[in-house]
Length: 201
Image (cartoon, rainbow, N blue to C red; front, side, top):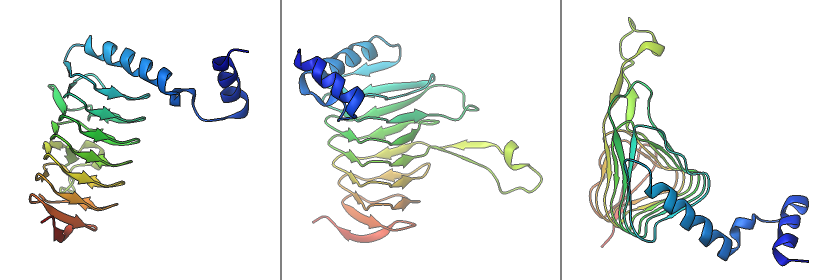
């Protein structure tokens, strides 16, 4: 029996790892996805960009993926329905966004070169103005602010980045931190809210 058919049977019946993990198959699928994305309006996609399965982005979001960028499985890009005009998700040369990240592109998100965004991170660019009791929560106005993440940044898993934040080049954000204010270059932060705990020297 054909080895590929055996593998497919094993995947369907015995629940073995995804057939997409086979390198040759995966390489072809990534190349096809790269080609399909390159045909979409508002998409700039460089050489050797790898976009893995179940990547989703809505209308109104433009993509700019530089050479060698990698977007892992189940990365979802969204935006608030009340926001008008286009916004951009820009990912720098060789940067990685790992699985299960949620990126709110109600405003621009810019990620520099050689940066790592860990699994299940959330980056927000919008919030609601909820300070007035006279305005029901569901009617509160939407406020947007872009997020900028520099080059050579390490963001570990389960980190939350709030609207309007700038994370400087070379910074490190510890696991499960909530970034509520700007992070200086080459600073290591941790906690809720994230506070400086060290520096890269």
